Each structure stands twice: as C-alpha cells, then as structure tokens.
Image (cartoon, rainbow, N blue to C red; front, side, top):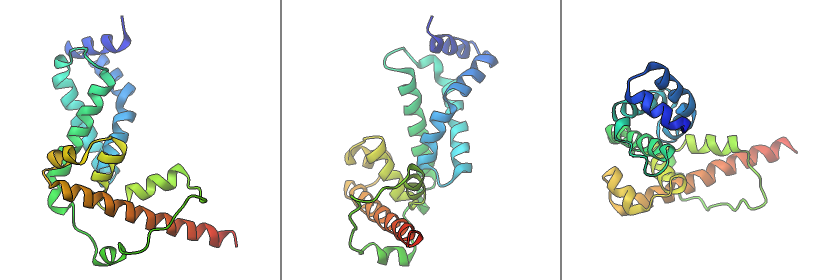
Length: 185
C-alpha cells in the first residue's frame, strides 16, 4: 500500500501517530507556501497550524484524484489567502517614500548574479499586497482574473500590484548590487 494512503487512512481513523507522521512529512513544504503569503514567520506558523487543522478535519474528503501533495498545497494556498483577506485592510498601505521611489528607472540585471537567499529576502520584504499578488502570479501560476476572484480585488489592481512588486524587487536588487560592487572595490 502507498505510504501516503496509509497515512491518510490512519488520519481518517484519528490515529495520532499517523497525524504526526503526516505533519513531519509535509510541514516544511506547506510552511514554505504559508511563508510566501504571510507577513512574517510567526504569522506563517499560525497559518500552517490552520492548514493542518483543515487537513485533519477534511482528509476523508480526499478522493485519490490528483496528487495528495497537490491537495495539501491547495489547502495551504487557500488558507493563506483567507488569512491575507482577514488582514486586507492593511495590505495596500505603503510608505509615501516607497510610492515616490516606484518611478525609478528599472535596472537590467542580466550580468549580475544573486543568491537564492538574496532573492527570497527581497520577496519576503515586499509590502503585503505586492507579495501576495507576486506569489500567486509568479510562483503559483494563477492568472490575474483568478487572483482578483481569490482576493476580492479588481483585475487591474492585481496587474498594478504585480507591476509595483516587480519595480520594488528591481530597486531592492539594485541596492544589493550596489553593496556588492562597493565591497569589491
């Protein structure tokens, strides 16, 4: 029998050992998803706990169609989006200086190399609205219409948030590049 099927059956029966094994097997994957949408690690941990509560409560509804991991990912994304919506009133607040700087000319980075950690830090530091739309569009592969439906925003707002996220990331990467150049001089 498939190891996932054994874990699923054990969780359906409410076996604590199966729930623990399922958590250990998938928590880091799902935490990464939660972290992409949360404002910080603590919020991501809270969302992850909500994800597993939903998984344990609804695991009987998994019908072996599609991958189990895909089913878990969908719950993590949807729970993260629900959390985002709860905090939506703060999502589009930005510092006035930040808004003024978005008009900077984008810089081309074809010849520069950035580490995965540098890229992740830049994405993690995006303002909440930018980060959510960026992750849904670029990482998860949703279209703007789907994002607008998920977040309850206009399609053009989704497009605008993505554009601003890209500009923000370009500026942050430019800052990192400047520091790297100064360190090598």
